[in-house]
Image (cartoon, rainbow, N blue to C red; front, side, top):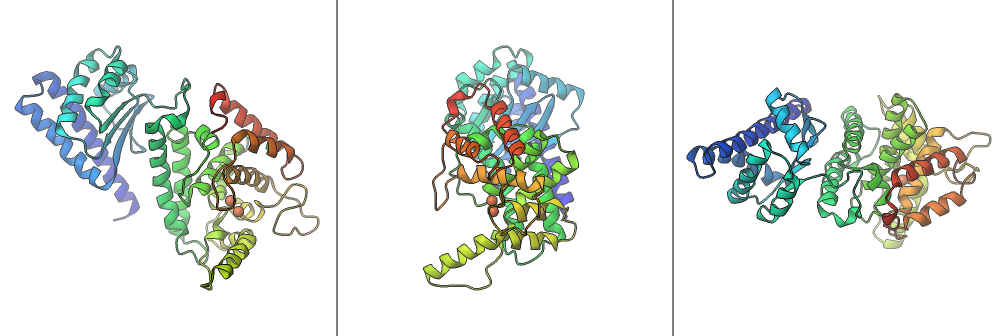
Length: 400
Ligand SMILES: [Fe+2]
Ligand SMILES: [Fe+2]
């Protein structure tokens, strides 16, 4: 089955499931929960949902701006009557509905019974749902935790972090397919996987499933090996936008951010058994990864211009330092300097074998001290103003 066909099948599964959910709410409203018809409708929804939850830990439905998005896939073909329902959901501040593995008929029926009158009169719906949340532990219903008004630290909202984690997990699955067993230029299918991953990442940031604010503010101890690629891609994209670059350039920047360390993922040509030799090999790989990465990307058909440049230049400094050693008289590109800022920031903000993640203020202070040295003054200034804009009203979480 082709990728497109799989996508279409999944889309029609989500759409069908969504309609089954609405039908079950309406039937429970009409006949009451004990009626045979209600039981039949509830089962019609729960059976395919449970089958889905065998494979994935949760299914998330988002209601935003008059749109229904299931597992990152917008369900566009809604009829008028459904749009009214979406509006009601929004009125009761129900932006996210998440069904988790382990959900029972009893929990679901209780939730549907609660929803039925709320769809007619949504006033205080959020309070009613919150008060009864303990009655349906495998179902999360409420506002998304990252609204503009969120006052508490995102780390204190397990649901929010969990949904972010899921967003990252789904992306990192595709990155694994790209980087695993890498021994030369990328195939056409890997290139399209990478482009698709950056588009998905952009969508997740736009929909606030993976807010940029969180990428910047959350000190990362995530062991996921691809989280750095995801973060650098997101930061390159945002910083390019901040610098008013063209949309087509922004796309390339985002792809370059995702692939900047691709040289690190090359399969080693020799296998060494003793640990000292291994660390030597590791060091060699580190020094060589910008060149190796640029080589792979340059030799990859269909690869745009910027990613190889970003792979080559992301460890080079504005004042001529860094590595690989610079050929005299050669200027750095804006793309390389953006990648350097994004890469350095993320490296300092996550736990690595050699160094623990640093608090945000320390990282920013140090980066300020490197203005005109390691970093291009304008690029760094724009990065700082982006951080400042995002931090409005978030003084509490500076030291995450
Ligand atoms: Fe690197
Ligand atoms: Fe990096």
